[in-house]
Each structure stands twice: as C-alpha cells, then as structure tokens.
Amino acid sequence: SLSPALEFGGAMSMERKLELSSVIGFSGTPRNCLLCTRFNEQNYLIHSIGSTLVVKNMDDADDQTFLQGHSDKISCMALHPLDPRILATGQVTHMGYVAPIMVWDLEAKAVVCTLSLHKVQTQALAFSPSGEFLASIGGEDDNNLVVWHVDVENNRGVAICGSPAAQDLALCVAWTHGSDETLITAGNDNLRVWSLDVHARKVQPIDCQMGQYRRCFTALVVSPDDENIYAATETGDVLEVSIREKLFKRIGPKKRIPRKITSAVLDFNGDLVLGSGDALTVFSLKEFKPLASLGPDDISGRVTSLAPSPSGELLVGTDMSNIYAVRYKAGAAGGAVIDTVTLKTTCHYDKVNDIAFPRGYSDLFATCSGADIRLWHMASGSELLRIQVPNLECNCINFNPKGSIIASGWSDGKVRAFGPQSGKLVFVINDAHKLVGLGNASGGIVPTNGVMAVCVTNGGSRLISGGADGQVRVWKLDSSAQVMIASMKEHRGPIYDIKVSADDSSCLSASADGSVIKWSLESFTRTAAVFGATFFTGVCYHPDESQFISCGTDHKITFWDATDMAAVRILEGSEEAALNGLDISSAGGVFFS
Image 1 (cartoon, rainbow, N blue to C red):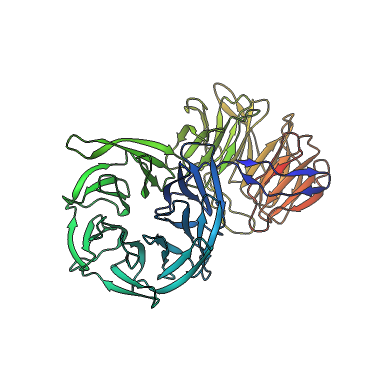
Image 2: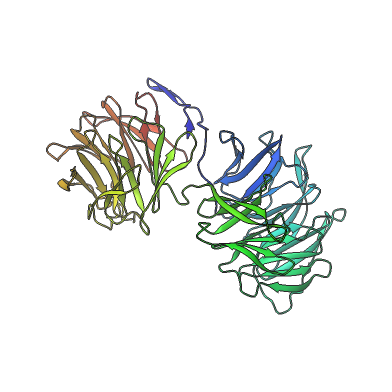
C-alpha cells in the first residue's frame, strides 16, 4: 500500500515520490535472505523484496522499515556478529556491470558504505568473528573471493585482497568462530580452507582432500569448536571435514535427503538443521543421522532460508514466499524436539496479475497470481481466504456491486465466480473466450491466453469479458444460468482492460492492437475509437465521464475527450518501463499508474 503523495491542480501537476506504507510479501527465491536480529530491546525480522530491504519489528506489526539503495534484486545477506545493527547485502545486475555490496546501519536506516568490485552478481557474504572483515564471492561470471576491511565508525570499506575462488563455481563462504585469519569456501567440486594475511594483503587457499567423493556443496556450517566443517550438498548428504588437517572424515546419512539441500544452520541443541527441496531435516552431528523431519504437508515450497530467532523459534523461508516459525519443546530424553509449525507470513510467489477492492469498501482487497486468488485484510495485511484452481493462471478479478461474488478470468478461457466468504464456486462460464490468443498487430507473440479482463456492470445484472482472442462479450447474470447477450469483435489483439460507464450504457476496452474502443451496451456496436502506436494496457473513466485516461507500453498517459475522442493531454508516465495499469480516485483529483 502507498501513502498518497500526488495531487493535481488544473493543467499543472506537482509530483512527489510515493512513500511505502506497508508491504505484504517475501522474496523467497534468494538463498539465506531471511535473518533475525535484536537491538534496542526489540526483535527484528530482515528480508528482501526485490531490490528493497524490509526490516520488520517482530513484536509490532505496524513497525516496518524499507531501505532502498540497490538497483536490482538482492541476492545475499550477512549480519555483523558483534553489532546486530550492521548488515551487508549483495545484489545481481546486468551482464558486464558491477554488482555493489552495501553495508547498512539498521538503526540509523542509512548506508554505511558501498563496496564495488564483483561483476554481475554477488553470490555470498560473511563477516569475520570480530566484524572487522567481510568476505564476498562473485557469481558465475566473476567467481572471485574478495576480503574487505569494513570501518563502520568512519563509514568506509576497502578491499584488502582477492583471488579466484576456485577453478569451478564457488557458492558459499564461512569464517571460523575464533579467528579472523581462517575462512572456508565451497562450491561445485571444491572445498577450500583459506589463510588471510592482512599485512601481506594475501589469501592462500588449501584444497581439502575429499578422497573419492565429488560433490557440489551448497551450504557450510562450522562447528562451535572450529574443529570441523559440515558441508551440505546438492545430492542430499553432509560431509564432515577437519579444518586443521583439511581432510575428509565421514559422510551421512545413509539414505540421502531427497531434492538438494539448499540451506543449513545449527539449532539450539547443537544439531544441524537442513533445508531441502520439500523437507526440513534435523540432523544429529554425534550420531550423524536424521533425528526428525518436516515434509511437504507441514511446509509448502523449497526451503531457501533458515534463521534462529532471538525468541527461541527457528524461522523457515521457502521459495513459495512463505515464512514458517518452528517451535521446540523439551524432549523426554533431554534436549529439545520440534513441537509446532506455524505459518507466519505468506504471499504470492509469482507475478500479481490483478488487484480489486469491493465497491465502496476499503477494509478488504483481493489479488490474483498464478493459480491463486487471495483475499487480504487491509489493516493487518493478513490473508483471509485463498482460492486455488491447480495448473491454471488467473488473469483478472472483479467484485460485483454487492460484493457477493468475485468474478475471475482464467487462462483456460473460462470465467469463474467465487463466494468471497466461503471461497466456493458460484458459477462457471465455459468457453467464454478462445483458449489461445491472437498475438499482436506487430507480429510478436503476447504470452497470454483465455480471459484477460472481466467487469461486472454497476447494476450487477451483466458481466463483460475480454479475451486474448480480441473479443468483447456481454453476459447476462442470472441465478439459474449465464447467457451470452452479445459478442463484439473489432479488436485484433488481446484485451487488457475493460471499464463500464456509471449508467451502464457504454464501456471502454483497451487492447494490445493499439486501440481503445467505446462500445454501446444497448446496441452492442462501436460508437467511437482511439488509436495509438502502443499496446494499451489500461483505461479509466474520470468520475464525471467527460474524459478518460489510458496507458500503455509507450510509457505515456493520455487524456482523451469522451465526446470527440481527441487527445487532450499527454504525460510521460514512466522513464524506464511500460505502464501496466491505471486507477483514479473517486473525486477525480488524483490518479495512479
């Protein structure tokens, strides 16, 4: 949600940046990008959403901080071992460009310093035990290990030394607990122990002797006594290697953990917790075998992050944008065992295709993404209802005037309506539109299928749908049946948006063929049209219906006269990307794109 900060007065406009008010979401795809910290006697949860760093107070849901400085997706994080306010983050960027590392002061909400050396991606980060040094590994296009001296007090960071991390790809890095002079890197068929000489500004690697074993290592955990490294692998096993002797010791479990291990951390008992494709496994380091596990029934998605919380929980992040809290209880034979698993945060894990509020009601809103329609509570950001139709994609949603149904358009060409309280299917319009779309006028392929836009009239008796086949269809909504009244075909490309006039006498449809058409809902014919060298993606009536506005892939917002369809004003809506949608306030003084 956004704090309103845009006001329009006459022909002149004052533009100010919209400030983030709250966020529902969690980028679960990057590994180990979920952390917990505690400062000022408060517990904080840290995670990323794209290029934005989110710092949430775990005791106060309204206390959220958004730190923006990265130019692209955040790819890795590391927390200072002694100062819980200091955090380092890395990012990905375009081919050939530098991917900077940023060191943040979470209390001051500011960047301490920016470290730029790696190309394309920063793969992994780790602070030394004293926090004086930061080790970073570049992605597959860089693959260098760099050690930085981070001076937090003077807000600066300097690269001390660097070296190619390995002959093959390196994926993770870790320091020993007791020394700033020893660190470990691992990756595809490489596990190395490095010695750092600060005065000579050099790092010297020694390859660990693995015998017959060849593995791709995905996560590293150093034992508390600095004797051993526990290296988790893509093949679902864990190797114990001596740090002092750089020698393989043992491997387990006998029955490998299915779907590769993606993250590992020591829990409160000193056991190893392993996150994999569809499970969470507690692994005993004494017996070198699994003690307990949580499967797909308990955790949805591939585990990508594990973070022990100061409150005694283990937080688990998955690539389906879910965060779970795993609680422990005292075991009968001593130690602690897994007690409960609670879903703490959830959101869509794919692009959000549409968002809709019930008419005249702002406490709830619905979103659709992939096979999901979800209903959210505005104030708390909590999920109230989830509707799923497996193996399909929901392209659009709309409430009827009473708010008693959620109409939705799907990639299989059907319109489905659901009850917003029960989530039960109310009705289905089969074959509302053709399954495969037209493409677009320029000959390219628009990867959209089925029903692309739905709109229920203000009287609630009709539903208008637009499809990837370029047709606009009007349906009569009855308690017993849904009958097509008219089918209007003039568009030659997918229809992205439909808006109805206040008196239900006409509607506007925006299409990828470069046209917005005004239709009569009495004679079901075209009454007017506008054309542009763009794919129109959104259209919206002004409340007094004297004008309407449109947006598209040409980055422009155009004001049109509703009578003679002449362009009144053209604004540059974006400097960087295509515009995907428009909406206007009920008073008509403010619009958003």
